[in-house]
Amino acid sequence: MTTEQILIVAGVLFVLLNIAAGLIWVERRMLALWQDRLGPNRAGPLGILIVLADTLKLFFKEDWIPPFADKWVFILAPAIVVASVLMSFVIIPFAPGIVVADLNIGILFFLAMSSMGVYSIVLGGWASNNKYALLGAMRGASQMIAYEVFMGLSLMGVVMLTGSFNLGDIVAAQKNWWFVVTQPVGFVIFFIAGIAETHRLPFDIPEAESELIAGYHAEYSGMKFGMFFIGEYLGITLISAMIVTLFFGGWLGPAFLPPLAWFAIKLFFFIGLFILLRASLPRPRYDQLIAYGWKIILPIVLANLLITGAVALWLRDH
Amino acid sequence: MLSHLRTMWLVFIHLFKKKATIEYPEEKVELHPRYRGRIVLTKDPDGGERCVGCYLCAVACPVDCIALQATEDENGRRYPDFFRINFSRCIFCGYCEDACPTYAIQLIPDFEMAEYNRQNLVFEKEDLLIDSEGKYPGYNFYRVAGLEAGVKKKGEGVNEEPPVDVHSLLP
Figure 1 (cartoon, helix red, strand yellow):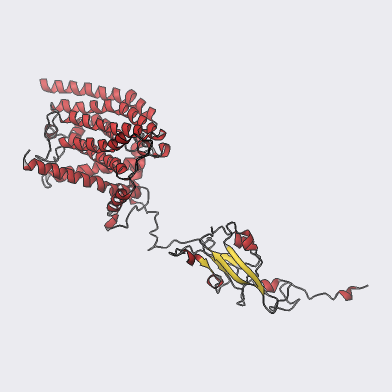
Figure 2 (figure 1 turned 180 degrees about the vertical axis):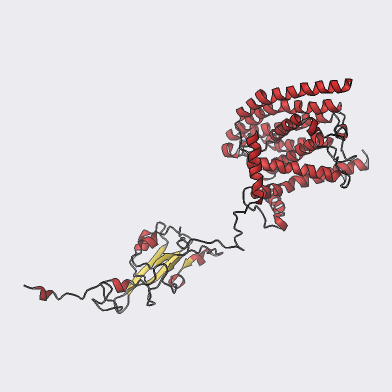
């Protein structure tokens, strides 16, 4: 490992964790504005120090482990979600040369790592030994069955057109046309799957505070709850980064701004879209999500794959 | 799907709408004149206390936060010797105002009563009395009452006829 790589790793980690913390404030302000409120605007300029206040509060809360819980699994679960999401960031090219590991199976690595996140929900809910937490964990597992298949398949169109699993190659292949133009169906379906993957509204079925209190993390407090919290925001950032890389040309953009700036602009656009979704759409039942995933989206994504394959073959021969 | 996009657009539009939040310490709430806030004791137009110490407010109070002791002056006019409201107990239900036969006890639109010391929430009579007739201007109980208590002579009140000499009614 060279010094440059260590610097990139440290920089990516620093920026990501700060974005995830800052999203606490961004989300609360944006949600408030969309609900005709003002949101936290007292601490510091525009209320941005609410992040500091929230973090300090979480640190000073009692870190309680219920006596009926399975102690070690209970401690392990929140770490899994943060670790698995942070691992996925390894393959994302933020700008030319700024990538932690330029894997030639980048997308597969992302799919594998992001699916690990569901273990945190299932283990956390199960180890809590609480009926609502267990219900949340079961819903988390059922939700994974619903979205995981079409999430992988929706990316295969992009892979076919590029001919590579490497994310750097995928960005380079979008020099002329972003893949959102050539793969609009793939983009919409990956976006839906991404919302389900991060367990955000409208697909926050395992959490469902109006039905299951807080679902799988009902028994968590203090910094362990904070880890789930940060994991969720990191997940939003990850899915937004993947959408930008796969469908919106990654760092590509007119030359008057540096590539990193283009990446950041697109990234924050999609993060904002995630928050807008939370403000506007209601939550479906989990059986509705499964039926939707298998009966509607799976046929669409398979048809998309078929057509993309045919077009790719035709383009190769002509 | 289209309805979802429409919903998202309509929610996004709210970014530019007027906000419902009132930024409280800088910007005050405009309360209804009959808002049930702090409790006061009002005075009649002649500047006398309206309260006649009938204890009805203390009886009506569901949380027993009103304590008083009635007494009389040399003219036989009743007034409270002490009148104490414990606002740390008060639930601002307004039953005392309902019960009051002389419009003495009234709730006014003021809710800014926060204190650091709990004892400071116990209001005595001199804290409660205000130099105002409150919501019922011009009303003086002793002017409409049949009782003579130094305010007017018997038979001189509002809508009151002079006393009849019962002996003149003999056939």
